[in-house]
Length: 234
Image (cartoon, rainbow, N blue to C red; front, side, top):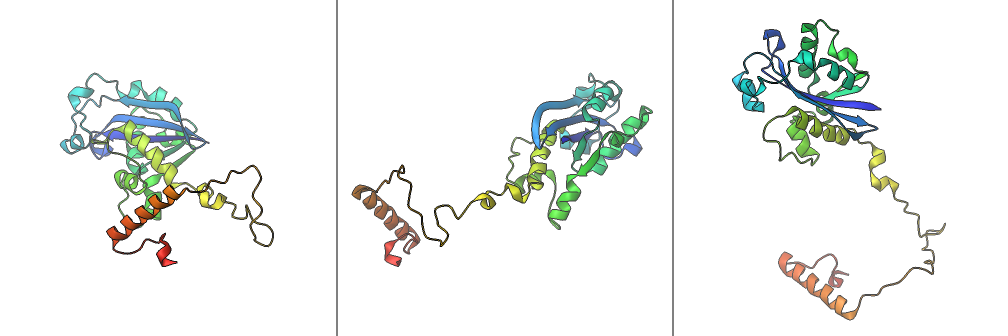
């Protein structure tokens, strides 16, 4: 299964009022594993950047002035995406901009390239109703480091979203607790089987035991109660 995780940055919030895409980043996953294929471009929008948008991504019109326009990267984008499942966080926003760019070039909509569109924001709202479900919040919830994310960036956000998506869709089969065979070492009656002859039995030395008791005493003093490992509670 081939998936493309996609993110964009824009000049503002509304393509209907002339806002344009200024950065697009995609990473590829095959069989739920990232490949080394990525797609990333900064794009010249040929217009000013809204101050609120600039505060989010830090991309200025001056920086983008020598970058390609969308028409010059569209064929490469089509080739990268065509036929894949596309995973986006808040898909309605990105698809609105992408479809607008394709319409300006008199092409069929971008969403027609995908075999399926998956919106991780909608999925997260179902999984965690009433909670914050921004990309940053999901990274925190799934213990995915995003400390290097000081500003939004399309490629970095796509890479983070790929990790979030895998964490969100991880099935029960991935839980190692279900893979443990608790019957190993017991016979049909539940009694322990004789250990194989090739196993080496290591017995703690007297010094080891004394060190162990010392540590237990330190734990007891610090917590003001005997530890659960102490023989005093047996």
